[in-house]
Image 1 (cartoon, rainbow, N blue to C red):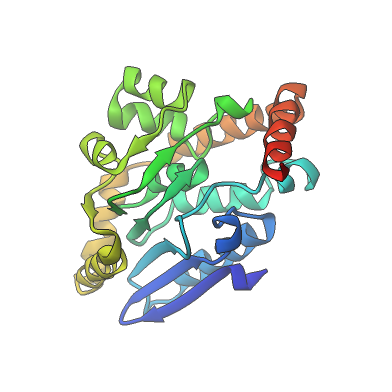
Image 2: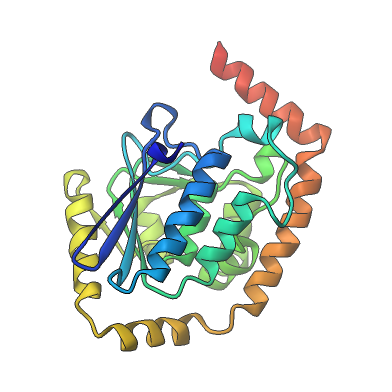
Length: 249
């Protein structure tokens, strides 16, 4: 389903756009495979200085496609999701995200690996892992407390408390909030500014800012083990079946 991840590159900026608007860009396994391939291609291409993530339709992404988690292959360290998470955690070039609408789960946690995040005014960020009977992923159990403090992290992750764009900016999850119609314009302008910086200094500074990824990768692996166990639980399946049933009604 490569058409569900659109790729366009120009003037040093590669934009990867979620393109499944009829499902609010819920990410399938095939989309993860395509995203992993696109991220690797961007790393390998010397002409690409910056990667910009965006989403078509009403939201950036509603997170994982729950049907895929119920029917897909076993969740393990070789799963396409994990390939993407590790790629984001160690990505050597600047990452920017343009976020809008109801952004859920991994749609939020992937922002923790971005260097700059621009959000539209009506953006709402939610990490409802516990509500679904799951645990956080993408290293968020490590990165969210570092960013916002232990108590606020507990509110966001244990309760799944939604954050509007202004609150997200205040907590440092978002760099700037812009009018809905100016989101891509602002994000693309930032991407261009980064792309015009000296490439060697840019990537070296990102590497220094991010530091040694060993602890982060170990946390991602620990989360994967817990997440995999929770996916097999009756608790998770009951929650998802209730949600899917409600959606059909």
